[in-house]
Image (cartoon, rainbow, N blue to C red; front, side):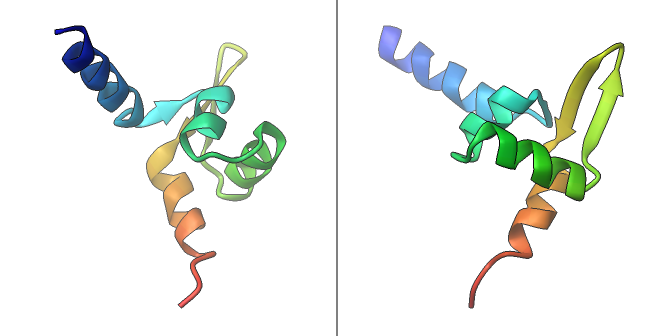
Amino acid sequence: MGHARREVETTKKYAKKFVRYREGAEKYSIGLTKFQELSKEAEAVYKIDGIALVNCEIFEKLLESFREY
């Protein structure tokens, strides 16, 4: 049962709409600094009481613009 619970936790983690910089860098497998730069470029950063949250939906739109066909 521990294995199934771990999968649920992982799925929940990656289904979040807003993430902090460190979570986002891990989620998209890119460096922290690069994730911060791209998030700001996408204008996907929300600052609340000194905490920066990144909207994954907006970030992913920017990420798709780098797609090679």
